[in-house]
Length: 180
Image 1 (cartoon, rainbow, N blue to C red):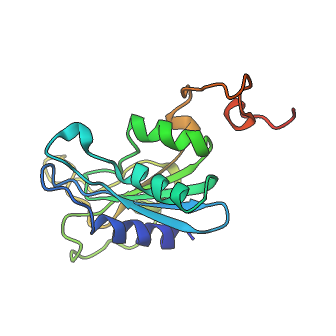
Image 2: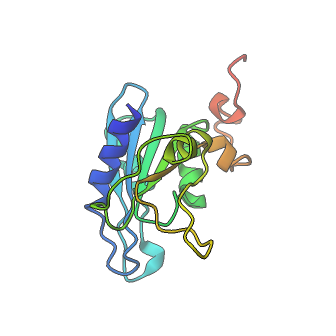
């Protein structure tokens, strides 16, 4: 399912509106029932009005009646996998504090030949949430020839999220317990 989710995030990234930063982001948010909601960043000349891909995906999901999520896939063309920004982390934590997140950074030239999978390429980077690449002659990292991936859990990225009481009680999903 992870590969399918990443493919959907790539699809959403291609629709991003990013004329100012040229930093296109695609998000695919999987609800608990398996439904996938897409989002892409939408920039505005007034930068503060820009909306991130993750929040667009959450908005689409909530508008469709979903409020419980399993995982999020992100796709960018950054030098390394990009986690959600702080604002997006907080919005995601409202619904899924332990959300699984996978992010990929695609090479600028997707037509470049790919390195085979193996313990010294993206396979290791994918498992451990680190970034790989090859060393150039001068010791500088050369551009990756295949997607780099990283994985996190939302509660690792945002260990101290904002919380609000509802009707005098803190919701169980915010407390992180279900034992009553």
